[in-house]
Length: 66
Image 1: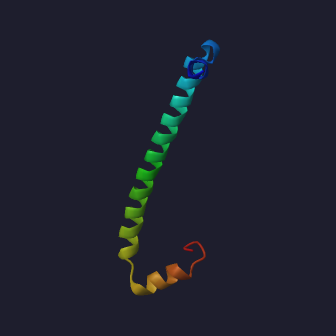
Image 2: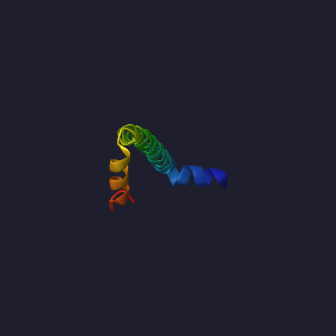
């Protein structure tokens, strides 16, 4: 029974390799995006922390900040 599911009438190697490729691609994509997000957050924090208190208030009042 389990061999029939794995082999899928001879097409199992194609199906399971495509499934594995998709999962690996999603994992790599997720990792790359997460690393880029962390880098951008560090850049944002570095730039935001150098602002004066008046400019910080102006930034908080902007619609795009929220």
